[in-house]
Amino acid sequence: MARTITGIDVGSRTAKIVRGQYKGNTFHASGFAVATQDARAAGAWEGLDPGFKLGASRVGLTGRDVNIRYVRVPRVPDWQLRNLMRFEVAEIGDQSGSEVASDFNLLPELPEIEGEDVVVLAMARERLLEDHERGLAALGGKLDSFTPCSLALYNAWVRYGVVEDDTVLVANIGHENVDVVIARGADLLFARNLTGGSKLFDDAIAERLGVSAKQAEKLKIDMASLRPGVSHPTANHERVSRALLGAAGQLLSLLQSTVLFCKSQVKIPGLKLDRVLLCGGGAALDGLSEYLAAGMGVRVELFDPFRVVDTSALAPDEADQLEEYKLESVVALGLATMGSDPEGYSVEILPQRVARRREFLGGTLWLIAAAVLAVAYLGFDAFQKRQQLAVVSADLAGVNRQLGDAQRTHSSTGELVQKSAGLREVALELQNIAGTGEQTARMFAFMQESLPRDFWLTRLTGAPGSEPELGIDQSIDRPILTLAGRAREGTASPAVLWQGFLNELTTAMPNARINPSFAATGDTFTLDFTLFSTPLADELGESGDTGDTGEPQDTPGDEEAGD
Picture 1 (cartoon, rainbow, N blue to C red):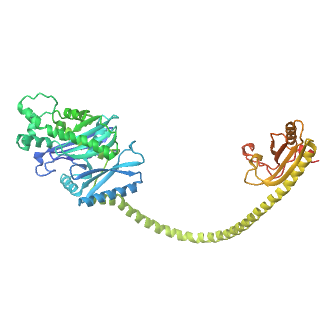
Picture 2: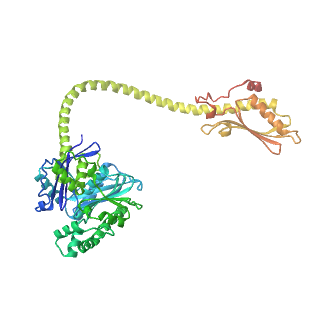
Picture 3: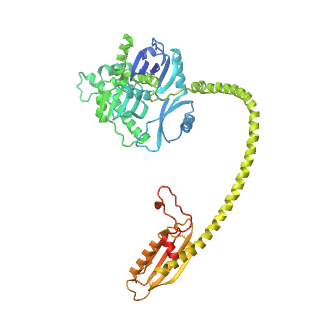
C-alpha cells in the first residue's frame, strides 16, 4: 500500500507543502500549504503553518550547498560501487573542509555507453541539512529524507507529463536557483541545480531604473514582457521590458550550457533537444516561453502537472491556493511522489547521525536480537548434541573399520590395475608379432593362386604401424603388410590385370583394408594391406560397439585362400 508523504520545497521567496499519496497512476493530494516571503521574514521555515499534520516528510535541496556529480564506473557489484562512491564523497569532503552527506543512484542504461554505468552522486553540506531538520521539527514533521529538487522535478515530469520518445528539458525557475532535468523518453539523462532564476530580472530592473528590489519585482509583474515583436502600450512598459533582455539572455545561456554540460558529463555528443518545459515562479514572466523558444530553436511550454492530480480531497481554500501557486509547487509534488511511489527514481540524502541511527534500527539491532536468539538456540542444541555424541562415536568406530577394509581393497585394486596395464602392453606386442605373420601367410597363399602370371614381387615388409587410409588411427599400432612388385615388360593390359587382382583380393578377404597404387608407366605397383584395421566411427552406428577383438575375422574366402 502506498505511503502518505509530505513533500516540502523551501525556496528563497516561497515555501510549498504538498501532502498525499501516489496510487492508481496518479497523485491524490490531501493537503496543501504555502508561505510567502513576507510571512517568512524571520527565517526559511518561519511563517509556515500548514494546518494539518505533516507526518513523514521529504524535503527538497537546491542551491550552492548541494552538488550533483556524474561518475562513470565499470559495472561492478553493489558493495564495490558503494565503496567507490564512499571514496569519492570523502575526497570531496576533504577538499571542501566540511561534513558532507550523500546518496547515489544509477542512470538508466544508455545505448551510447557500453560496459559502463553512469552514477548520479548527490551531496549536501551537513549544516544545510541541520537547518532544515530544525525547521521540520518545529512544525512537528518527521524526516523521511532529503532529495535534490531536480530529481523531484524529474519524478513529477515522468509521472504527470506527456512523455514521448523525444528529448525534453524541464526547468523549474525559482527566485535564486534553477533546477534542470533532461530526459529522453522516460529515461533520466541529466539533473542539475543552477545559480540564477527570476532574481536576475529583478536585479536588472532595479539597476537599470534605479528602484528597490521590491519595486523592481512589482514592475516586472505588472509591465514587463519578453514576447518577440510585442507592441508596448506605454514607454514605461518598453523601458521595463528592455531592462530584462540582458537577464533573459543569461537565463537562455544557462539552459544552453546545461545541454552542453550534459553532453560532456554523460558522454552523449549527439544529444539534441526536442522540447523545453518551464515551471516555477519565474516561468510566469510574460513572453519568457516565446523568448526562450526563439533562442533555443525548439518548442517551449509551461509544465502543469496538477491537471492530472486528484485534488478533490483538498479544502476549498487549499485548492484556491494551489491554483494560484501551481507553477511553483511542481517540485513539492515531485518530492511527495518520490516518497509515496515505491517505483520512483530516488536519491535519499540523510544526515550522518540519522543514517547511523536508521542503520542501527534497520540492521544492527536485528543482528543483536538474532545473536541473542542464536546463543539460546546453540545452548539447547549443545545439550541435544551431547546426547547424540555417544551414539555417533560408536558409529564412527564401525565406519573406521569399514574404511580400513576399503583402503586395503583399494590398494590391492591399484596393484592389479598396474599389472593389467603391463600385461596389455605385452599382449599388444605379441598380437602385432602374430598378426604380422598370419596376414603375411594369408597373403602368400592368396598370391600363389591369384597373382597374374607376368607379375612378380620385388619387396615385401610387415611391421606394426598406424595409417589413417587403412583405418588405423594413431592411438594404437596394428600389423601392416607392404608389397611392391613389377609387371613383365610387354605384358598386355597390366592395369586391367592389376585391377582384377584387387577385385579378387577384396572378394577373398572382405574385412581387409588396402591402399593400392599402380604406376602410370604400367610396370610397377605397391600395396599396403591390413586385416587389423580400427573401424571408423561412421561405420559403427549409434551404439559405438566395434566388436573388434584385435584379431582378423575369418571369412569363407579367407579359408579358401589359406587352404
